[in-house]
Length: 487
Image 1 (cartoon, rainbow, N blue to C red):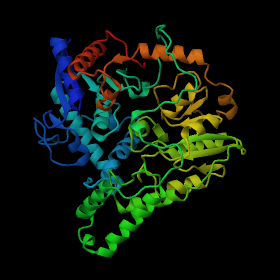
Image 2 (cartoon, rainbow, N blue to C red):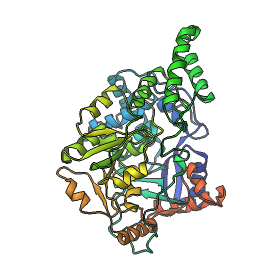
Image 3 (cartoon, one colour):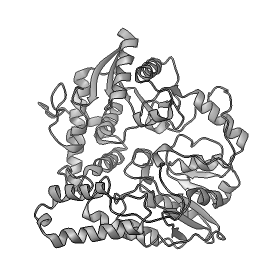
Image 4 (cartoon, rainbow, N blue to C red):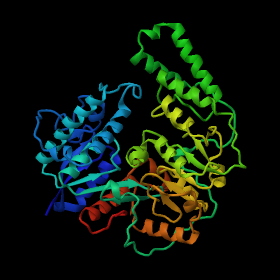
C-alpha cells in the first residue's frame, strides 16, 4: 500500500529531506498534505499568529465549514488535557509576549478556537487522503500540536523525529509518550566513552558566565526592541518624554545589576517584563551555603518544547519544585537557579510567591556556577533539561519530572509519588553501565541533522548529503525497515 504522507515541515533543511524521501521512496510514499511555509500547501505559522498568510492551496480555513470529523478528539478521555496543552502552546503568541499577538483574550476564546481549528484540520486531512503523519520535531507549537492531536484521533500512524545532542544524530519515536523510552529489545553496541567528571559546553549556552563578573549596559538591540514596543503598543505614550525616559532608567538599572553577558531585552521588550527583571536583581548578592545539604533545581527556558510538550503537568515548574519539596527532609534545601536566557513568560509575581512559600528554597544569583551546584548537590532535579545528563556523566544521580531522551539511563530517576531522597542518592550512575546504555541509545539513532542549528556540530556538514541521509532514514522508518529510537 502506498503511504500518503501528511508532513509538518517548516524549515528549508527539513523540506529538502522531505523531497529526498519522496525521490528515494518512489511510488511507496506520496505527499498528501504539507503544512509549512508559503510554498507548502498551507502556511503553518498563520495558525498561531492568526493572520491571512497563504500557502499554495490558500489559507487553511478558507472555504471550510463544520464537518464533525474531529468529534473523536472532543470526546477523548484526555480532552481537558489536550485543550490545556493547546492553550499553553498558543499563549506564547499572546499579549504581552509578542509584538504582533493574536487577538484572543479569555479562556473561552481559546476554547472556541481549539474546536474550530481541530475541525478544520480534520477536514483537510480527510480531504487529502493522508494515511500517515510525519513531524520534524516533537509537536510543541500550535499548528503541529493540533495536527498531532487530530491525526492521532483519526487513527493515523505517526512518526516524530528530533535532533539529539550528539553530532549528526537524530532520534525517532512513534508517539510523544514514547520519548525517552529506550527499546527493551535494544541490540548490544559498543559503549560510548564518557570522560569522568568532564563538563559539557553546549553551543547554545555560549557566552554564559559561571562566576561573578562585570555588569552590563543597555545594548543597541535592546533600544531597537524598545522602539518596536513603543511604535506597535504605545504610540501615544511614545510622544511623552517622561514616560520614555522612565523606561530607559529602569532598563539601565536592570542592565547595571545583571552580568554583562545577560542581555534581557535584546530579543523582545514589553514594559511588564521590567518587573520580572527587577525582581531578579534582589538575588544577585545571594551566596550559596556549601555546608548545607541541598538539591539543585535549575529552571528551564520557557516557552520551549522541553517543558510545554515534554513536561506534562510539570510544564508548571513551580509544581515540580513543590513536589520536590514534599519528598525532601526539612534539613535539605532546594537551590533554584533561573535560566540565563529566560524572559518574563510564566514568571509572574504569583510564580515567585509560590516559591517563597517553600521554607527550604533558596534562589541563587545568576552568576552562581551550575557546575559547582551540580557537583556539591545531593542530586540534580529537572523537568527534562540537559543538566540531568551532565549530572550522571559526573557520577551524580538525577531526578526528572518530564520526558527526556536520557530518562532511562543508569542513575536517572523518574519522579513518582512516594519517591524518597534516600532512594535517589542510594542509586547513582555506574559509569560502565552508563557508557553501555548510551552506546545502545546511539545505535538506534539515525545519521543526519533535522534541526538546522545543530549543523554547527558537524565539521564537514554538507546540505545535499544531509538531505539524502535524512531522507533515507525517514524512508526506512516509515516503511518499518528500521525501528524507531524510542519504543
